[in-house]
Amino acid sequence: MTTRSVLLHARTLVAAALVAGLTTAAAPDAPLPLQRMGAGDTPTVTVTLADVQASNAKAAMAYGALVPMWRAHFADVGARFVAPQVARFRGAGVRTPCGAVTANNAAYCPRDNRIYFDEIFLAAQAKRAAMQLGTDGDMAAVGVIAHEMGHAVAIQLGQMSRYTYQNERTADCLAGAFARQADADGQLEPGDIDEAFFGMAAAADPTPELTGDRRADRAILVRAALMGHGTEAQRTANFRAGLESGPGACLEVFRDG
Figure 1 (cartoon, rainbow, N blue to C red):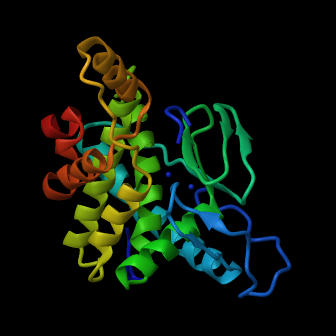
Figure 2: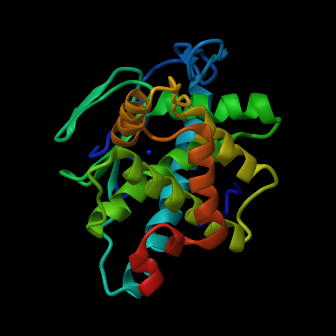
Figure 3: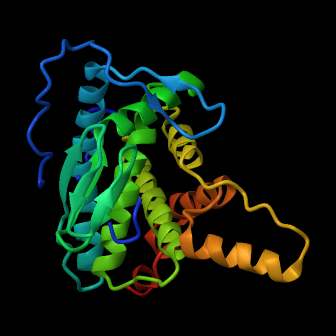
């Protein structure tokens, strides 16, 4: 995503600008703790302070574009968007009014209208995407911010489901709508959309393993609907819906507005 752009795991869980800068005294390229993305044989990446600083700058830029975009869409439907603040942390979890946000995570908390994210996690998302795709990887991290902002959008419009997956589907779709707007504004670089899809896939749930027993399989699928973010196929499809059709594909209020 270009520097001129005007354009984050809990269900109920980024400041008008990002909160205070990094406090570590490490050199700009000093390695930070290894950050593992995913599970199993997923490779680790070494995140440096310079990586974190670059990722935080991209997150701030994305925030600066997301807020006016959603304010405009809310105004179109006669509503007012209250921009969430952003609170970043590093490596260890943080307590919020909505509960704990663990390391390697991002979350929106409606009780204090704040998006929390582990800055090492965000930098690792971007770095791993860069390794895999041969790009700068930034949109994989920006997508996290856009997803969590999507939760804020849906909640402020009263669009919440009892099922976690339905809420996550909406947030992924709204992140796609943000990418659509950025693309329309000419703010995306080659590879940015691939990076966004990579980020969705990297944080996806495993495909449920069904047993062939109808009752047992129903329980497995119900649990996935209650607890999950969606499989890789689901997350990428949900993001694509917003990317191709805009916010009206994500929330009915934007179709009617």
